[in-house]
Image: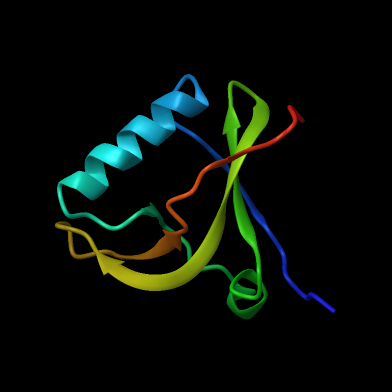
Length: 97
């Protein structure tokens, strides 16, 4: 039995799923991991890592998801610790929700 949970995040700066894919492809080509950095560490990390996904919201509608592979501590240039959510590079389009 799966005990996973999912995250839902706004896809800021992208109007369409293709924009997100293009941005992530550019980042990977420059040697950066596929990840989303957020301020808060998820409280239920183990359940996220047990098959959970990050669902992307575009203009108020969920249109895509990516499987969560890892949670890593990221320290910004400002010295603040954040959570890097490591994502599967494959973006899966979903039915509009």
